[in-house]
Image 1 (spheres, rainbow, N blue to C red):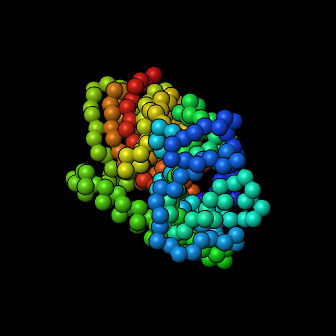
Image 2 (spheres, one colour; image 1 turned 45 degrees about the vertical axis):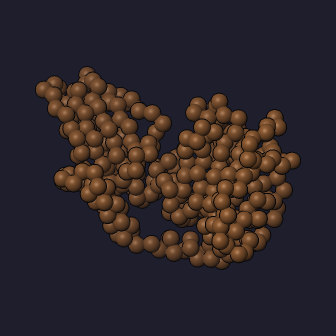
Image 3 (cartoon, rainbow, N blue to C red; image 1 turned 90 degrees about the vertical axis):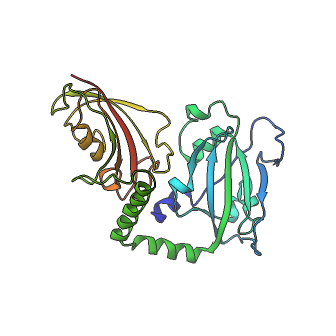
Length: 292
């Protein structure tokens, strides 16, 4: 997992200036268009050097403080940034070189540049009205490139069974706090709530219209809004395995809330777009709208 995260973000945070010079209270703006604000001062003594790798807890937000990416959900081992001398001019690394462990800072970046460089996409709808994107970081560790390579090697040899056990322990903790009497069924899926009707059941070859919304166990949504999907039930690879299993047990008009373990969701690799990390259990709310 660490290697995947680092591969996506190792050469990161090469930002560019905004078209218009804005004054934003509390932030200073440099000639390259970066807006910077120190949020808190850490207790570290040494600043990173050009040959270091810095590790951050990080949040990426809209200006209204809506989080759309964070290390808690998307990069559990942290955000790794290599401080290379050839990236210093016109990059955020200039600021990172002046931070110590424990420092927290906020940077503002033009959205079109931010999404093109970080996600290789156009500005999504939820951020189109924002003139800037907010990046909040806390420097948690300064390591050498040799230490970074060692961490990658450890990650590659991680025991899969230990990771899966940790995932089950997280589910158990969630259930203990919220749904003490819920147990896994024969497939390993946890049904939290379910309504019943006497209408037509889902069956092989029927066209099923379903709405669903996934979230992490802490409530953060996987998708911005509820998804509506229509497909021929039984067609392979249309939905994750856990959703397909549960939909096959429902009738028209029925709703259910379930927990799907990663082995029936996005597994050891996570989702292809990076929105769901490896070995991550998900909560789904499902409703069967129609069956034809």
